[in-house]
Amino acid sequence: MTVLHLADEGEAADLAAFLSRLLHYDRSAAVRLQAAGTALAVFGRPPSFEVLAVRAARLAKPYENGLDATLDVTVSAGELLETVDEPAATAGVPAAVTGPPWAGVLPPRGGWRAEPGLPAPDALRALVSAAVAEFRTRTGELAPEARTRAELDRVGREIWSRTVGDTGLPVRAVHAAQSLGFLRPPGADGSREDGSREDGPKLFSSGSWLRLRTPYGSVALRRAGTGALGISVR
Image 1 (spheres, helix red, strand yellow):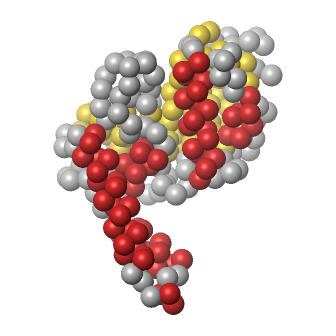
Image 2 (cartoon, one colour):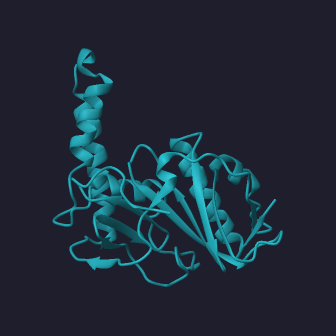
Protein backbone atom coordinates (compact mmCIF):
# COMPACT_ATOMS: atom_id res chain seq x y z
CA MET A 1 0.00 0.00 0.00
CA THR A 2 1.24 3.46 -0.86
CA VAL A 3 2.06 5.38 2.33
CA LEU A 4 1.76 9.14 2.62
CA HIS A 5 4.08 10.70 5.20
CA LEU A 6 2.40 13.82 6.52
CA ALA A 7 4.45 16.71 7.85
CA ASP A 8 3.40 16.22 11.48
CA GLU A 9 0.69 14.92 13.81
CA GLY A 10 -1.34 18.08 13.33
CA GLU A 11 -1.62 17.52 9.58
CA ALA A 12 -2.71 13.92 10.21
CA ALA A 13 -5.29 15.03 12.78
CA ASP A 14 -6.72 17.68 10.46
CA LEU A 15 -6.95 15.18 7.60
CA ALA A 16 -8.77 12.71 9.86
CA ALA A 17 -11.15 15.43 11.04
CA PHE A 18 -11.94 16.47 7.46
CA LEU A 19 -12.66 12.88 6.43
CA SER A 20 -14.85 12.35 9.50
CA ARG A 21 -16.92 15.41 8.65
CA LEU A 22 -17.40 14.25 5.06
CA LEU A 23 -18.51 10.83 6.32
CA HIS A 24 -20.99 12.49 8.67
CA TYR A 25 -22.87 13.73 5.60
CA ASP A 26 -22.29 10.67 3.42
CA ARG A 27 -21.23 7.33 4.92
CA SER A 28 -20.16 6.12 1.48
CA ALA A 29 -18.23 9.27 0.60
CA ALA A 30 -15.35 9.10 -1.83
CA VAL A 31 -12.45 11.52 -2.04
CA ARG A 32 -10.07 12.32 -4.85
CA LEU A 33 -6.41 12.57 -3.84
CA GLN A 34 -3.87 14.57 -5.80
CA ALA A 35 -0.28 14.87 -4.67
CA ALA A 36 2.91 16.20 -6.16
CA GLY A 37 6.14 16.73 -4.31
CA THR A 38 5.24 17.44 -0.69
CA ALA A 39 1.73 18.83 -1.29
CA LEU A 40 -1.44 16.77 -0.95
CA ALA A 41 -4.94 17.93 -1.92
CA VAL A 42 -8.04 16.01 -0.83
CA PHE A 43 -11.29 16.76 -2.70
CA GLY A 44 -14.74 15.80 -1.42
CA ARG A 45 -18.36 16.72 -2.09
CA PRO A 46 -20.70 16.77 0.91
CA PRO A 47 -24.13 16.29 -0.71
CA SER A 48 -26.00 18.60 1.63
CA PHE A 49 -24.14 21.67 0.39
CA GLU A 50 -23.56 21.09 -3.34
CA VAL A 51 -19.99 22.35 -3.22
CA LEU A 52 -16.57 20.84 -3.71
CA ALA A 53 -14.51 20.87 -0.53
CA VAL A 54 -10.73 20.89 -0.63
CA ARG A 55 -8.37 20.16 2.25
CA ALA A 56 -4.67 20.56 1.54
CA ALA A 57 -1.95 18.98 3.66
CA ARG A 58 1.83 19.12 3.78
CA LEU A 59 3.81 15.94 3.27
CA ALA A 60 7.13 15.25 4.95
CA LYS A 61 8.27 13.32 1.90
CA PRO A 62 6.49 12.28 -1.28
CA TYR A 63 5.86 8.53 -1.23
CA GLU A 64 6.91 5.00 -0.58
CA ASN A 65 6.51 2.00 -2.87
CA GLY A 66 8.26 3.61 -5.80
CA LEU A 67 5.92 6.55 -6.42
CA ASP A 68 8.19 9.50 -7.01
CA ALA A 69 6.22 11.73 -9.36
CA THR A 70 2.54 12.38 -8.74
CA LEU A 71 -0.50 10.71 -7.24
CA ASP A 72 -4.05 11.09 -8.58
CA VAL A 73 -6.63 8.58 -7.39
CA THR A 74 -10.21 8.39 -6.08
CA VAL A 75 -10.66 6.29 -2.95
CA SER A 76 -13.19 5.56 -0.21
CA ALA A 77 -13.12 8.28 2.45
CA GLY A 78 -13.92 5.72 5.14
CA GLU A 79 -11.11 3.38 4.11
CA LEU A 80 -8.67 6.29 3.95
CA LEU A 81 -9.72 7.43 7.42
CA GLU A 82 -9.03 3.95 8.80
CA THR A 83 -5.41 4.19 7.61
CA VAL A 84 -4.63 7.54 9.21
CA ASP A 85 -2.11 7.08 12.02
CA GLU A 86 -1.94 10.40 13.85
CA PRO A 87 1.06 9.64 16.14
CA ALA A 88 3.06 8.35 13.17
CA ALA A 89 1.74 11.13 10.90
CA THR A 90 1.06 8.69 8.08
CA ALA A 91 -1.87 7.59 5.92
CA GLY A 92 -2.14 4.64 3.58
CA VAL A 93 -3.76 5.06 0.18
CA PRO A 94 -6.56 2.46 -0.25
CA ALA A 95 -7.41 0.75 -3.51
CA ALA A 96 -8.97 3.00 -6.12
CA VAL A 97 -12.75 3.07 -6.48
CA THR A 98 -15.03 4.05 -9.33
CA GLY A 99 -15.60 7.63 -8.40
CA PRO A 100 -18.87 9.58 -8.48
CA PRO A 101 -19.37 12.02 -11.38
CA TRP A 102 -17.95 15.01 -9.53
CA ALA A 103 -14.60 13.25 -9.07
CA GLY A 104 -13.98 13.44 -12.81
CA VAL A 105 -14.10 17.21 -12.82
CA LEU A 106 -12.28 19.75 -10.67
CA PRO A 107 -12.08 23.53 -10.44
CA PRO A 108 -9.36 25.15 -12.57
CA ARG A 109 -5.83 25.00 -11.21
CA GLY A 110 -5.03 28.62 -11.96
CA GLY A 111 -6.43 31.91 -13.12
CA TRP A 112 -7.97 32.78 -9.76
CA ARG A 113 -8.42 36.46 -8.95
CA ALA A 114 -9.47 38.05 -5.69
CA GLU A 115 -13.07 39.26 -5.39
CA PRO A 116 -14.08 42.12 -3.07
CA GLY A 117 -16.96 42.37 -0.66
CA LEU A 118 -16.50 39.31 1.58
CA PRO A 119 -17.48 40.13 5.19
CA ALA A 120 -15.17 39.50 8.13
CA PRO A 121 -14.96 35.95 9.57
CA ASP A 122 -17.13 36.78 12.60
CA ALA A 123 -19.79 38.24 10.34
CA LEU A 124 -19.74 35.12 8.15
CA ARG A 125 -20.20 32.85 11.15
CA ALA A 126 -23.04 35.06 12.39
CA LEU A 127 -24.65 34.87 8.96
CA VAL A 128 -24.66 31.07 9.09
CA SER A 129 -26.04 31.04 12.64
CA ALA A 130 -28.87 33.39 11.63
CA ALA A 131 -29.71 31.24 8.60
CA VAL A 132 -29.80 28.06 10.70
CA ALA A 133 -32.03 29.79 13.26
CA GLU A 134 -34.37 31.03 10.53
CA PHE A 135 -34.66 27.56 9.02
CA ARG A 136 -35.51 26.02 12.39
CA THR A 137 -38.05 28.72 13.18
CA ARG A 138 -39.80 28.57 9.81
CA THR A 139 -39.95 24.79 9.65
CA GLY A 140 -41.00 24.57 13.28
CA GLU A 141 -43.97 26.83 12.55
CA LEU A 142 -45.26 24.53 9.81
CA ALA A 143 -48.39 22.56 10.52
CA PRO A 144 -47.67 18.82 10.88
CA GLU A 145 -49.42 18.00 7.62
CA ALA A 146 -47.33 20.66 5.80
CA ARG A 147 -43.99 19.53 7.20
CA THR A 148 -43.14 17.41 4.18
CA ARG A 149 -39.69 16.75 2.75
CA ALA A 150 -40.57 18.82 -0.31
CA GLU A 151 -41.56 21.80 1.86
CA LEU A 152 -38.48 21.51 4.06
CA ASP A 153 -36.31 21.40 0.95
CA ARG A 154 -38.08 24.44 -0.49
CA VAL A 155 -37.48 26.48 2.66
CA GLY A 156 -33.88 25.33 2.78
CA ARG A 157 -33.23 26.24 -0.85
CA GLU A 158 -34.73 29.69 -0.31
CA ILE A 159 -32.50 30.40 2.67
CA TRP A 160 -29.25 28.80 1.56
CA SER A 161 -29.35 30.14 -2.00
CA ARG A 162 -29.26 33.74 -0.79
CA THR A 163 -26.01 35.45 -1.64
CA VAL A 164 -23.50 37.03 0.70
CA GLY A 165 -23.85 40.73 -0.06
CA ASP A 166 -22.95 41.45 -3.68
CA THR A 167 -20.36 38.68 -3.93
CA GLY A 168 -22.54 36.12 -5.68
CA LEU A 169 -21.43 33.54 -3.11
CA PRO A 170 -24.44 31.57 -1.78
CA VAL A 171 -24.86 31.29 1.96
CA ARG A 172 -24.74 27.48 1.63
CA ALA A 173 -21.06 27.74 0.64
CA VAL A 174 -20.31 29.58 3.87
CA HIS A 175 -22.38 27.03 5.78
CA ALA A 176 -20.33 24.27 4.17
CA ALA A 177 -17.08 25.95 5.18
CA GLN A 178 -18.31 26.28 8.75
CA SER A 179 -19.61 22.70 8.94
CA LEU A 180 -16.38 21.26 7.55
CA GLY A 181 -14.22 23.13 10.05
CA PHE A 182 -12.81 25.62 7.54
CA LEU A 183 -14.27 28.75 9.12
CA ARG A 184 -12.81 28.39 12.61
CA PRO A 185 -10.76 31.22 14.12
CA PRO A 186 -7.07 31.02 13.13
CA GLY A 187 -4.89 29.20 15.65
CA ALA A 188 -1.25 29.39 16.56
CA ASP A 189 -0.15 25.99 15.29
CA GLY A 190 0.28 26.93 11.64
CA SER A 191 -2.12 24.22 10.46
CA ARG A 192 -3.27 26.02 7.35
CA GLU A 193 -4.48 24.96 3.94
CA ASP A 194 -1.24 25.89 2.20
CA GLY A 195 1.18 26.23 5.11
CA SER A 196 1.02 30.03 5.06
CA ARG A 197 0.29 32.45 7.90
CA GLU A 198 -2.35 34.39 6.00
CA ASP A 199 -5.36 35.05 8.22
CA GLY A 200 -9.02 35.11 7.33
CA PRO A 201 -11.20 33.76 4.51
CA LYS A 202 -10.91 35.24 1.03
CA LEU A 203 -13.06 34.96 -2.08
CA PHE A 204 -11.67 34.21 -5.53
CA SER A 205 -13.13 33.67 -8.99
CA SER A 206 -11.92 31.90 -12.10
CA GLY A 207 -14.25 31.91 -15.07
CA SER A 208 -17.62 30.68 -13.85
CA TRP A 209 -16.17 29.42 -10.57
CA LEU A 210 -16.14 30.92 -7.10
CA ARG A 211 -13.79 29.72 -4.37
CA LEU A 212 -14.04 30.57 -0.70
CA ARG A 213 -10.55 29.97 0.67
CA THR A 214 -9.73 29.91 4.35
CA PRO A 215 -6.50 29.03 6.14
CA TYR A 216 -7.93 25.54 6.80
CA GLY A 217 -9.50 24.59 3.47
CA SER A 218 -11.61 25.76 0.55
CA VAL A 219 -15.04 25.32 -0.94
CA ALA A 220 -15.60 25.84 -4.66
CA LEU A 221 -18.76 26.00 -6.77
CA ARG A 222 -20.13 27.28 -10.04
CA ARG A 223 -21.79 30.67 -10.08
CA ALA A 224 -25.59 30.66 -10.15
CA GLY A 225 -26.97 30.05 -13.62
CA THR A 226 -23.89 28.26 -14.98
CA GLY A 227 -24.83 24.68 -14.13
CA ALA A 228 -24.36 22.38 -11.20
CA LEU A 229 -21.09 20.94 -12.36
CA GLY A 230 -18.75 22.45 -14.77
CA ILE A 231 -15.23 22.42 -14.37
CA SER A 232 -12.36 21.30 -16.38
CA VAL A 233 -12.24 17.57 -16.87
CA ARG A 234 -8.94 16.16 -15.69
